[in-house]
Amino acid sequence: MKPAAVLTDLDGTLLEHGGVIGEAVRVVIADLGEQGIPVVPLTSKTEVELRGVLAELGAGGIGSFENGAGVVGPGGVVVSEKAVPVAELSARLLELARLTGFRLTPATELPAAEIFRITGLSRERIPAMLARGFGLPFLAPEGAAEALERFAGRLPGTRLTRGGQFWHLSGDHGKENAVDLLLRAVLVSRPLAGLGDAPNDAGFLSLCDVAVLVPRASGEIDPVLRAAVPAGRLAPFPAGRGWAAAVAELLGEETT
Image (cartoon, rainbow, N blue to C red; front, side, top):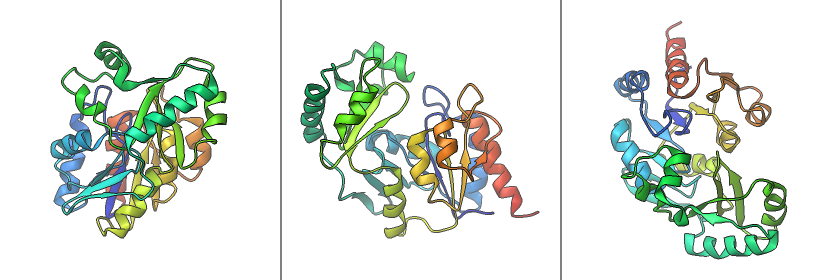
């Protein structure tokens, strides 16, 4: 199946650790560009980070930031009606801390060295990562998961998701909402290919015409993602190497 657009998660999927774009990915992106197929990141990253990635990819200039809070395209930014400004999310995080009894630390309060340890981002990239408009990443102690998931339901219009070590508080939107925004704004058209590696990607992958599940560094597919997208194809390798192989295979099917 030759896709009209490739929707993709970034960290652990298209990108290597530390936000690096591998050579195999660059080769496939160049091939997609020659065929007029945009690569559309759907990410928890900020709009500032997304724009940097889009400029580096040079693959269409279209993407979604902060887990479906909005989309970027040639005509500007479209923000989801479900998005909640970060100042309001900060107040909700304080309430969640009160309800759970756990100390919940926003990423903005962490030392740069700790953010580097968690994300692998260089010191120069950290300000862009913290430039949140509609999402709030935070750390929670071990053992807090059950209480967080239970009490987050008491905060109307709020969604709690978990990435690697960071939890994310946002309005009640996800990457699946980005697909709707992109289609309504006529920024992409079907058929859509989607690639992701985490449970947070399951919503948008389920809306794609073909979904590819990328293994974690261990070589295993996340079991929650596998259960949520049972018809998903499996990429042969983790991260960008697997992304490149899977997309190249999709493109090759067009001529077989």
